[in-house]
Image (tube, rainbow, N blue to C red; front, side, top):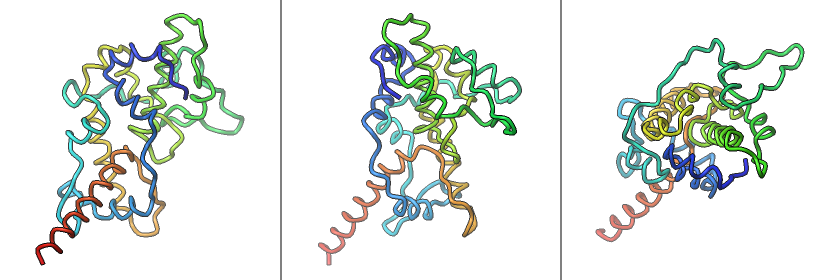
Length: 231
């Protein structure tokens, strides 16, 4: 998805301009082995990582500092009734969803990220404000589905956040940071409880875990350095 400067005023109203800039800069290098080791040390009872050098967790302050999202405000809640979700998505994005191939059933979990990229990859020049709004909505929905609230499939963006994005100022009054952290906690708890040999998937904001992983590594090395100095 190509960012357009015409999105900036709308994203500022929604308090999502900073996190959009973070996402455009790219995420830290992905290290599956290190992330797996970190997830294995997650304890659902305390919502923290139990490391050789102590406990560490992701806090709301971390979310605010790393992603630049709001952590105070109204909760991110909305209608979760799946009936009629396609019509709500089409109204939100201003165009019909792709037709389902013969013999296949449309997923009810969300909007295809591939379809979003095909339909809204780049906002055309010299279009009206309404069209820019539709493209900006698609950009935000893609950002939620790929970085902030990715699911285990990796190819859909949930339609459940649409009620919170219908009005930019209303979106700006919501605590997106709390929702991101709660979603990540839930996914970590589910991932660490999976039995050995189960299909390994991890949802949630991996960008946060990547940064926390670096912090854990630095903290461990610093602890070892001071222990060696004291010896």
